Image 1: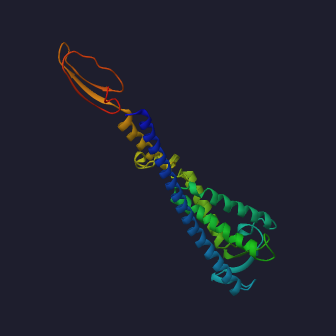
Image 2: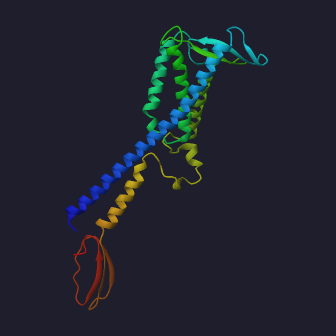
Image 3: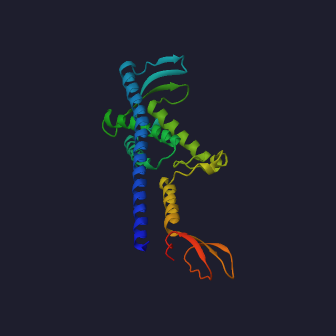
Length: 264
């Protein structure tokens, strides 16, 4: 077989595999973004609905008791961060929230862990929920006050978005400490307690396995030659030859060869 034809065949197979791998990655990134959007959208919807109901139904200074004085609903306008912290820095917090949203969306395509997707989806939804208040509520864009309404004991008053941010952040911290990485791989405690890590290929590079398979097929079909020579005469023996070589013998030779060197 001509070397140029072999090279073209290998190149074509490699290009096809690269295209297929790129298509799979794009499809997976789109699915991750879709799941993130569903989670974040659910949080935002719950946050907006509850805040709207609280503003319409609860009078400031007149809390609604749910469990005595321990759990109440009370309307609080918060110019600070979650749980009424960092008041007076509303515009800074708004810019930080915008940066968080941009970073999560930018790197969402690298996520391969369902738990990481859930955690970041909660953080994204919470950030967007409070960001909506800061942009559209009084006293004006980037300075709007967030509506808080849930009061539990001594805990600062919070809302659905605050809860989502905290729960998502706690989940991400736990995943990191246990060794469940965002790309689906495992390290530390998670790797040591993996029931059978050898049977779970890394998803960090989905195309690596496929590319290796193509290379193996290419080596088997193109770059290897095998032959069996049986000779009679002064020396009688059997052998297997892989590669390129020349066999000279005396007597009758019967053999078969496959691969690139079949004509040798």
